[in-house]
Length: 156
Image (spheres, helix red, strand yellow):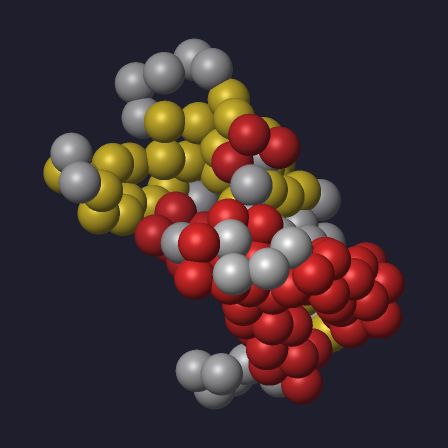
């Protein structure tokens, strides 16, 4: 995998393509109408509506550029993984050394990562440390608070 490649699931890829299409068609049209209206209000140098519309246009165009780059460089990973080895798409349960409480995660691409939803990026420190591990493996990884040791309780 190269540095520009973005690993995503088919679901996330479809979501990005849909958002990109919406921004290029619907959102650009809305912004153009807002700009037209704001221009009709007169003096552009002191026109808050015009400035706001221009900022929204710039942010939208930046998002379009980012999505185009992500879609262009996307590597879609399917669920063709080994069920007993941690990899992209794995559902895992890990337990911190000295704790009785397990934590469940799904290994996803960096664009899909969301710790509140227990979606862990495969390139995050914890995610990278988990890649290739099997049930029963004990591993250590570096955190801002020092080294942490965990064990893999379940891989599916």
